[in-house]
Image 1: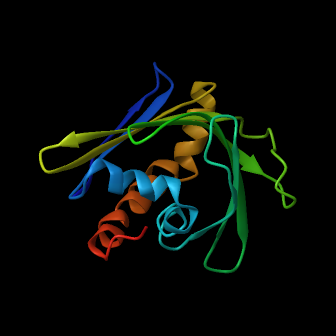
Image 2: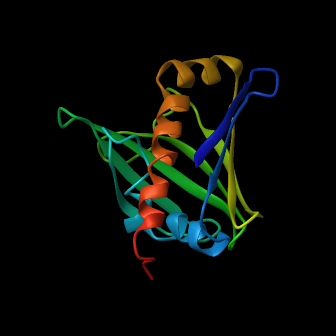
Length: 165
């Protein structure tokens, strides 16, 4: 089923995507916990991700890059602020330079991911908050909302395969 709603709220400086999947909460959690599974869907289909670091604990960091169709690389970083398996994950998110060091040009966003049972499946809510309305608008203009929808819509295919452990 994947993405069922996307809500941009300039007053709250937020973007919220809600998706539903035909799999249990623990299985959907694995998609965040396992960097090899995460890189199969984080990023739209034309910009696949590669995670170089994924320290999935509070205070841990992740670094990754997405490779575009022409080979260009867009780098990013996460700092995990909460990891409450298998229902909640929070992280700060930003862009990085070619060495993986954070760049401040576009600021930092904060993501709160919640997973909850929904019928026989799982509802995943990704709530991103921004530092300013200007940052929110720039990120949407850069394709963040559409890219996240495309990324999340890849999850059903991964879940349809034999579960990985």
